[in-house]
Image 1 (cartoon, rainbow, N blue to C red):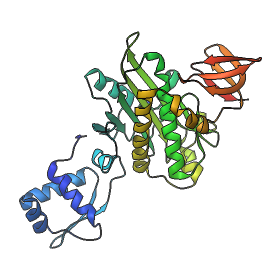
Image 2 (cartoon, rainbow, N blue to C red; image 1 turned 30 degrees about the horizontal axis):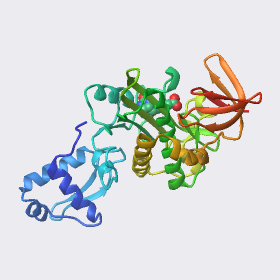
Image 3 (spheres, protein in one colour; image 1 turned 180 degrees about the vertical axis):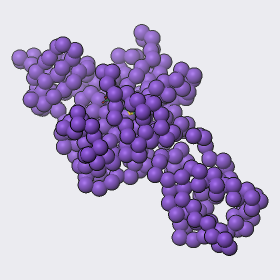
Image 4 (tube, rainbow, N blue to C red; image 1 turned 120 degrees about the horizontal axis):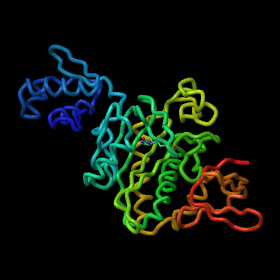
Length: 328
Ligand code: BTN
């Protein structure tokens, strides 16, 4: 897909959006933009190609009936209150994996904050070499290029920051009880609604870039999940009973995550810990952590300044930097 709308089409779109109930005549539009009638027809065709539903009447002109139900760069950028995230957007109808493309873009010096988003992933990547179920038009499948000047050991904190931004955005928008399940998941009513995948390119003491991949199950119905996921996974629509506006959620997440990310880049997790604790689904609970062949059981006590989990087991504290959690 082309990455940006031609200028005239973008301007025409802005006007059509102002009042979706009225028709704007070709003459009116061409006088306004100083382009020929042909230029206006071309712009309208371009918008139709992008999936905008445009009604055309002979003497009346054009009217915008509806926006496409895919996520487009110009819709994401409109009124987006960020300074870094989403300044450059690569949006697709289908891609193998947004993380994979973002990684390649970052290797080619793609700037910090670049957003790669796709309506569908044919080979979405999950953690631990698993896949990620990413059907068309019902989720947010996105990756961000980040270039924080922090030691690689602090990078896992970024997952927690993204989890916090996600859980709080979902809570604000839907009033669902969304929580961070350390270290990489966002759960609603105990089921996984979103996952985070961090991929790093780094030297021993310096991060070159981080690809932060975020997958949110937004509008799936229960029946479209594969059998293997039905028990563990959910979507916001399933939990809420109604559809959720993906575009609004995406913008809210980007705005919130940028604030959290900037704080993290400056001061680490310290100042964010009260909120992380508030949104945690496991602190204070008896849990089991699986890391490779090792299994630890104990009470989840806290998240430390590196984003590691502290559990109390057999009367002593143990710090765990990665693993899979289940509640006991
Ligand atoms: C997990 O296993 O919990 C992490 C899942 C991360 C999925 C997202 S979807 C967008 C981005 N691109 C990918 O291929 N994976 C991540």
